Image (cartoon, rainbow, N blue to C red):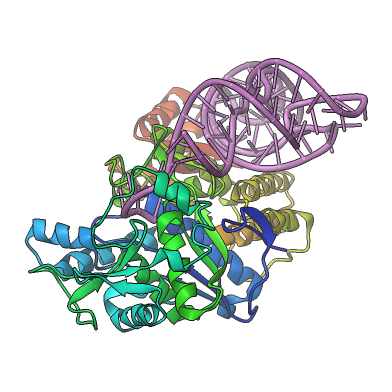
Length: 469
RNA sequence: GGCUGGGUGGCAGAGUGGUUAUGCAGCGGCCUGCAAAGCCGUCUACCUCGGUUCGACUCCGGGCCCAGCCUCCA
């Protein structure tokens, strides 16, 4: 049975869906004013894995995954002004880029991808309800604020207490607010800013309210899982709970999942620190599957240190797995029996709060078994286990490419050596000709030349195969 | 300052009150014309000080160190 570490209770809990026929998950997506970085890649990949696993348990049609797009906010407006273009052009560009990045990483699209600008009706509606219920107030400056004092359990998710927050020196005082901790639901538009009409005048939504409005609109007032990066826990998710529960009168979310940060040199990767690597930058150097493996090789709640060494390690590990599959005919579509111990251990690992490192360890043991079966000549069993390996790995979105494709062209970006497959094959033939007449120096020269260009030759069972390192 | 989370072998990274994580790297062997890949074997661990226990890396307490949140951020 699946257990999830719930940020709300800070404990591992058995996962019990509200309705097993429709398991509902909402994840906070991107604010689209720049390219996605590796931190965003982690959110995309981690929750894609969660999504895959939920569908495995409850059925493909029984899981609804919603991931929003924030396509209007201060930063978007600022960036568009800097670039001297309409904000819609800017967001369109980065939404497309995000979709490209996600697809490259093998991230399956969610069922719904609501955008703030397409959800104004629901957003305004929720603010109106909050005002009517006395949980929000319109200030003199045209903004509408959420009244924190009316929501008694505020701080539950982030483990914060109101008096402690107030004691902190970093809460900025805004004259228009009744309480410095009140947060904005509706921002009055300044001249020249994009705006929408509302009962409180022209303006745009605050950041937090859009997620409350979109999630409850798409998934209902009460749903199963809400996820996002750890940095959203406070104040974003805390505020979402306050807004949603005050507006609907229902419990908002049962399980909160937060993934850990990506770090660079032991420091959080973030836009504000400027120490980020964009996904597309990294993909010039590494195969997207390597990036995916790198992300899943750590537990989702642990910090993930980014470096070339770690990606090189991920590539080596993935090469080992693909090598085990290399010589097997894996075209068969038949589903493999999963009642064996290996598959059970794999699923037990994922059941334990999505322990992907443990699950990967099982895959390596399976790979070794396949290699042993192959060298023992047990081809039927080797193929069976090979199919099982690929079947299990599909839950992680790994090993779905052909081994040949990964091993020969998996370097990421272009094959940098300028050699075509035919040229490589020609040299292999020339080398094997030399080997037949025992001209070893000549044969080694061909191999060394290819090695210098990053092409590794391997002679096994009377055949020569090649791969790029 | 308040509140979280964490400190595991050369590196990365799981886990457990007494028994092999796993990957990469190293070493020895098998295989190979030689390699590579693969297989077998093998060496490096559990921040520190106390406590509980027959026994703790694993539980409890103190300390040190690191990261994060308290402000936009996945």
